[in-house]
Image: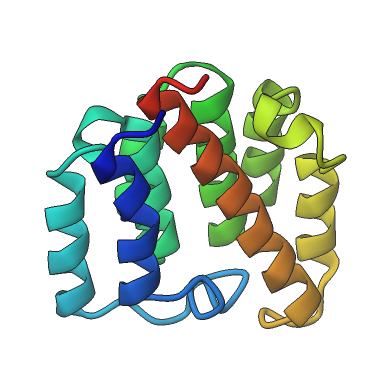
Length: 159
């Protein structure tokens, strides 16, 4: 059973920046504002984010703060860290490095049931002629949400 802070964090993120507006491009072009950074810093200091580096890495990706996400994800051991690290490198356009990290997380339970292949997705993004390809941006959001929800379940004891 999820604790109250865990069940409320998705609602809070959606109220700040709905998923259909988050990560609007495959590679961030504009920095987020100071207001968003202040909110994200607060969220990272509260449960369940303060108990999970994976959730913190996810949060910074959600707000297109790749450097902050990278600083956290590179310290997370195992497939979960590899996936957040790979997503970050793909979003910065470092496709070779993204594939390297995805090869360490390809069997992650968050993606096993979806049939999602993160390495193939890197190839799709690299081949895309548009940073705003709606199909790929939607896939990016779906990928983020699947891993984020898996990480929430892990923190709440559901995994």
